Length: 377
Image 1: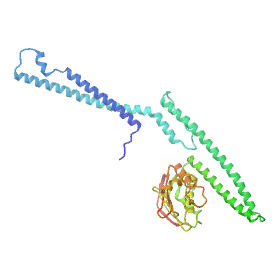
Image 2: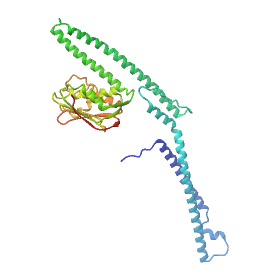
Image 3: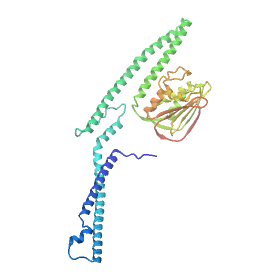
């Protein structure tokens, strides 16, 4: 059952109108009691007017007339007071709506500023004018928070850029030195064997650093948003996996999502690499792109995965005990981080008989006709 959701302005108007109506009802009731007490009482009227005693018929007529008079007067009072109360309550509700709108204008300005904020554009501020009250204090506090956030984001971007340069440069130099040593025709077998191990370690270190930097970048959110043809992006990514021994199939609908094409390419590539790495030699990978949620689905064969172990796969550096392939355990963490940066989400569940199915939900901006593709060659 859906709960009715009222805005703050509507609730303030309802409270204002409700209290006004309650006060009006109390006032009408008090007025009714006072007027009723001032009207002549039937029992004491004959004594009050004096004069010769009345006969039974005349007494009955006087009582009936007085009762009709009192009843008509009180009914008229209630009717006119009720009409006046309804009209003034409606006017009070209209005035309450206008006053609530004026009072909530600063909050609307704060909300509008928050909606317009982007990671690459944290320079927007509210700069609220007006009396030095609680709402202006709130707006100034929000502006101060944005100043601190902008400083933190700038510091993080500089750190990531510097770390990228400082970490990649020595690894590139090491790789070059190892390759030069391995290319020496006089190198012994032990040197070549050691060089091969060092080169493999160097490659894993480079992948780990690239993954960590990508994870840090996606955790910052999106710097820009643009329409991305997800089906074309998946096709291009699958082309790089054409030499994999697994059978890779694709069923795709042309779908456009709003986001960063580079980050989405990393998302798809990490999903495909994870599906191929943690798979049987003669296994298969099924990729589906569709316009209804989930937008992207990647399912693969492989070892049986316990259901309680699946949530941990999205944590950095978390791998199953029997996982092979030399990965750093960042693939699904990066996928989740990129999906969250696009206001999406990722879910996964084990497949009966072995393997994993990963579903990615992303905001869809366009859906068109369906296309089916077979084996990627």
